[in-house]
Length: 294
Image (spheres, rainbow, N blue to C red):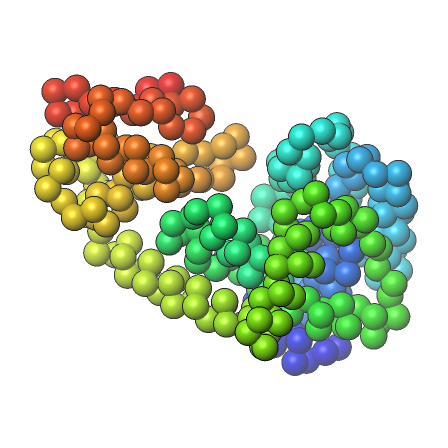
């Protein structure tokens, strides 16, 4: 057992029963091994998307590993046809198959990659904060390279998902091209720097939520646009981001994009009478009141 690595994890108390998602790659295998080292009662779940010729081999590898470790194993078969937005569709299919609260092997490096991707997509403050949900992501304090070394030291040769090397996927280019370039430019490992910066933003966002909580008690249909138009832009933007959140079929909540919020602000200020939002929604203004329709 690597006690130093285990101290970097955020696991529940020993004896707690947990569901763990294991793809067969070194991140999820490392999660499984560390969860066992932490004394958790582990039930492993593996999702086979049948999108690669070797996916059945991945499932067999995880099943065999669980048998050797005397761990409960559940296989979930899903069908995700190849095509546009495969990553997103596969992620949604995986979420649908896996039980609620399942642990995943996201590391500090994954969090840094997500921050950079959100930044390049024009995300606001919320998109630039860290993955703070250590309840389901207990390895956010762990570096990927240390996790891979830990798995290798245990004598386990984890599976390689070839899609993780495919430059058609944005995350892969961020991982294999952008971050190494940033390290080279800054002559340092930028991942801890990014995480410290987002940790500060986490604290600031928590404080912002606290002082703006009364604003969010004001429903969209109850607000008077004449009053809203007098608010500072930052306050109005924060309120709109809250009242215009949307949820998908899996219960994931998404804030509107920066562009959507700016369009909504134009409606509030009377510059336009309506605007289109994601999910086929339409925000309109009539008699100084706002209406959201689908």
